[in-house]
Amino acid sequence: MPRRPLDELDNLEDIELPKPLPLRRICSTKACRGTARPGGRHCLACHARAVRRYRDRHAQQLSTRRRDAGALRDEATRAADSARAKLAMALRRGTMKRGVCHKCGTADVVGIIEDPARWRDIVWVCREHRQAELERRQEDMERRAYEAKQGVWYDERAQALAAIELLPSDEQARLHTLAARGPAGTQLSSDAPLYVMNLVRAYEASLAY
Ligand SMILES: [Zn+2]
Ligand SMILES: [Zn+2]
Image (cartoon, rainbow, N blue to C red; front, side):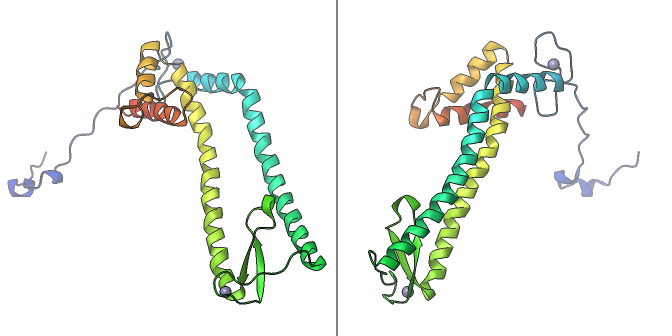
């Protein structure tokens, strides 16, 4: 093997370390000798079984959640259409008057309905200030989209929770102890959102050994 001249070795980062041998990790399920999934504690079969079991046990809950999300979307669209129609009708009948731009006082305005449930609360804006108002609403929408995306994480969380149920009870207890740690030394109850987040985080951290 050719040797590197010493002066090239000054920077220790230049030395390539030998790669660690890949270890075969055994599935954590009792009596299972399967190979753990990369980054996971259980073999593919055990993991799939855990996820299936979780889905079965929570089938009702999961389908209700899906249905509610769809209904909510339809409802929001309907509510917005109906609010716009009510406003147009009120303006035609004269029961409501156009305001002036809330930024500059110009009378040539369009109305933006903030919340369909309170369709009389109109933000009146001139053409010039409409853009700023729409941008603000766009930001709101992006924030909501971000929150919706977090819903996708729910599935990942469900899988982590299912995997935790497969752990030996002492390991589960350890994770639950970590999960209960709230901010500033407080104890969280097990139904607190932060508790569940902590639990999943603790589980994921325990995988990174
Ligand atoms: Zn297994
Ligand atoms: Zn204006």
